[in-house]
Amino acid sequence: MMSPSSSNRRRFLQTAASAAAFPLILPSRVWSLETAPSKKLTVGCIGTGKQMGGLMGQFLSQDGVQVIAVCDVDTTRRTHAKEVVDKKYGNTDCKAFNDFREITENASIDLVCIATPDHWHAIISISALTHGKDVYCEKPLTHNIHEAVKMVEVARANKRVLQTGSMQRSMGEFRTACELVRNGVIGEVKTCIGSFGDPAKPNANPREDMEPGLDWDRWCGPAPLAPYSSVLSPRGVHNHFPKWRETREYGGGYVCDWGAHQLDILQWGLGMDENGPVQVIAPENFETAKRGAQLVYANGITITHQEGVGASFYGTEGEVHVNRGKFELKLKGERKFGFLDKEKDKGTSVEREYTLAQREFLVNPKVSLYKSKNQIADFLDCVKSREKPICDVGIGASSAICCHLMNLAYYHGQKFGWDPIKHEFTSGGDPKWLTREYRGEWKVA
Image 1 (cartoon, rainbow, N blue to C red):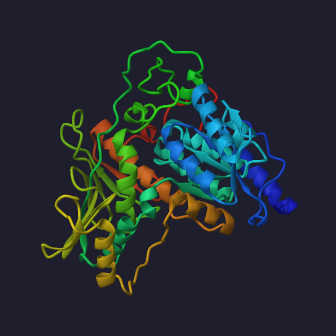
Image 2 (image 1 turned 90 degrees about the vertical axis):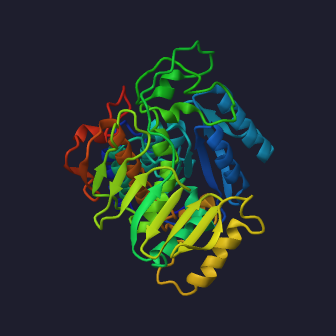
Image 3 (image 1 turned 135 degrees about the vertical axis):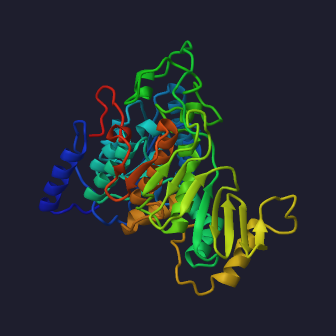
C-alpha cells in the first residue's frame, strides 16, 4: 500500500495519541486510501466464541482476504480458532494471542473483526482504529453512550472504515419494509413497536471453581472483577450464546442484544440514522417492568418496547411489520402482502411477498435505501473504496444509543429529555449514566 504524506502522517499520529486512553505502540506504516489489487487484506479476529465462528467463516471464504491471527482469553477457544484457520489454508501460520493488542497494534494486519462481550467493544475498536485498522465490530457497538460518541470521533479522526454487525440491514425484507415507510406507502407514521427481550439486571451469578486456561481478569477487563461464573464465560468451545449479555456490567440485556437489531431497523425506517429520540419515558413499576419504555422523537413519533412481530411501523394509511423471515404490509386494514407464519402462510415465502410489494409500490421510489446483500462483503468493498458501509460507525453508534437510553429508563424509572446531536440530557437524567467506572488500565477517556 502507498504511504501517506509526511504531513498527513504527523496529523494521524497526533490524533491517535490524543484519542487513545492507553499507551500506543505505533505501527511502522499507516494505510492509504487505496489497496494494491495484488495484496490480500489481512485480518485479525478477536473474541473467538460462537458469534465469531460465523464471522470468521465468512472472512475465510472471501477472495483477497487472509485471516492471519486470532485472539481469545480462553486457551481452548483460541487454539480451536487457530486450528480452523490453519485447516482452511493448509498450513500452521495463524498466530494465536491472549492480548488483543498483539493484533490491534500489529502493522501486518489490515482489518480487525471484534466479537467479544460488549464491555470490550469500544476499547478494542479504539485501539484498532488508532493503529490504522479498519474494523468490523459486533452489535451493540458499545457498552454505554459515552463509548458510542467516542468511537465515532476516533473513527472519523483516523479516516477508518467501521462496519457494525447489524446484519438485518443486509436482508431484503428489512430494506423493503423501510423503503415502504420512507416512501409514504403507509402514510404518516405515528407510532412504532420494537419487540425484543428484557432489560439487563446486575450480575448475581454465584462463584464457581475455574479450570486453568482462562485469563479471567482480562475477560472482565474494564468491568468489575466478578467471581468466575461459567454462565458469563463458558469454558472452551461452546455452541450457545453466553448470558453475560443479560448483565448490566458486561452487556445490556436483550434491550441491547436484540434491541440493537430492531431499534436499528426502526431508526432506518424513520430516517433517524445518526439522530435519535428527544425524550425517553420509563414504564410504570420500572423496578420490575420488562416492557413499556418509550422513545419519543421530535416529530411526535413514539417507539414502544412491547411484544410484537419485531419492528412495526403504524401510519395513517397502513402498517408494516418485519422480522427475520417475516414481512407484512397492510393498507387500510387489508393485508396486501405477508409472510409471518410458515404454517398459516403456506404457498408463498417472505422473499416472494416483499418482492411483490416492491413491484407494486417501489417501482420508481423517491427514496432508495443503501442495498447490501452481505454485511461482511459490504465491509470489504468499502475498505477498498473508502466509502461508508451500510452500517457505518455513526449509524451503529446512534442505534446503540437508542438501546442504552431505553435501558436507562428501566434502570432509573425517570422521564428525561435528550439531545440526540449533542448527546446530553436536556431535562432530568444524570451525566454519570452516560458512562461507567472503568477498572484498572482500561479507559475510554
